[in-house]
Length: 450
Image (cartoon, rainbow, N blue to C red; front, side, top):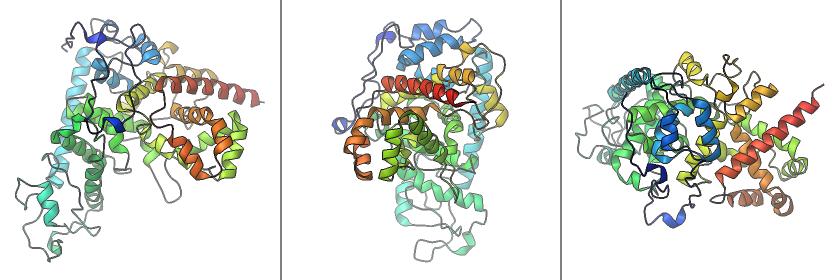
C-alpha cells in the first residue's frame, strides 16, 4: 500500500477553506468553531508515526489525540475508516488493500444489480418524481423522463409499450416482486432529499457529486431491505461523499455508520426506532435534573420528541458542516471499541452493531474513554451501552435548564429555546459536558445498587 504524500504545510493548513460555502448561502450557515490546534489535533505527522512498518496502527495514541482536538482535515478520510470499523487497527497495509478491493467489487456488484432493476442508477441522473405505482405499474410521466433522462432515450429503464394517457404504463409492464416495488418507490424520495442536502456547499454544485450521493443511498436502500431508505440518511451519508473520493469507499463508511444508527430508523406500528434513546434521555434527566424532568412532564414534553432530530442526524442541523464532522469523530473516538471490525465482519452487511458482546482480551487503552468507563462500571448491558449521543443531548438540556425552567410555558417555548442552540453549540464543550454527565450518572446509578 502506497503511503500518501503530504505537503510540508499540511499540518498547519487552515480548516476554514476546506468545506467551501456558496457566497449566497454563507450568511445563513453557522460559523465553524473548529480550529487546528498544534499538540492537540491529530496531525498528519502523528498519524503517520502511529503506524508500524507493516501498517499496524497504534490506536491508543490516535484516540487520545482525537478526543483532545479532533482530526486534521487532510487525513480525516483515512482516520474515519478506522473509527467507523472499516479496518482493524491490527491489520497490515497489504491486508487493508485486499479488504478495500474486495469491498469495491462487492459494491460494484450491488450497484449493477440495482442498475438492472432501474437504469437510472449509475447514469448520473437523479429521480425526483415517482417512477412506479404501489401496484407495481411503471409511471411514464414526461416530466420525470425529461428531468431524469435528458440525454437518454425515454425507453431506457422502462418498457416500450404505450401508456394510458395519464403517464401510467399498461399493465403488461406491471412488476410483481414486492421488494423491487418498495425499493423503486423510494428512489424519488432519495432524489428529493439529495437535492436538499448540504446545498450551501460548493461541492454539491457539481452534479456528479449529487448523483454519487443518490447512487449510494439507492444501493443501500436495496441491500438493507428491513430498513430501506429513510429521511435523514442523506445528511449522514453526505460527509462520506465529501471526504472519500472513491464512491465504494464512501458507501462502506456510510454502511458502517448505519450499523450504529439503523435502529433509529427502524419503525413499526408499535414504536418509532429512536424511541429507546428518547427513553434513555428521559431516565438520565430524571436522575441528573429532577426539576427539569418534572417541568418537561408538566409541559407535555415527557416523550422528548423535541430531541428527535438531534438523534436522527447527529446534530447536523445544530452545527456547521465542519463542526459536525469534528463532533462525530470525537464521539466515535470516545466510543471506540477495538473489536468493532471483527464484530461487523461476523455479522454481515446492513445489520445492527452487535450489542452486549464480551470484548476480546485487549488493553483498555485501545478503547475510547467513554467505552472504558462503561466497561469499568459494567454499563454494557444486554442491549448495549447508552450511546454518547444521548448524553450529548442531555448536556444541551442541562446547559439550558434554567432558561427552560424560567421561560418555557408550553411546547412552543421549549422548541424555541432549543432551536436557539442552532449555530451556538460548541462541539468540544458538548463532548466534555457529556462525559461529565455520563460519569455523574454512573456514580448515581452505582449508588442505587443494593
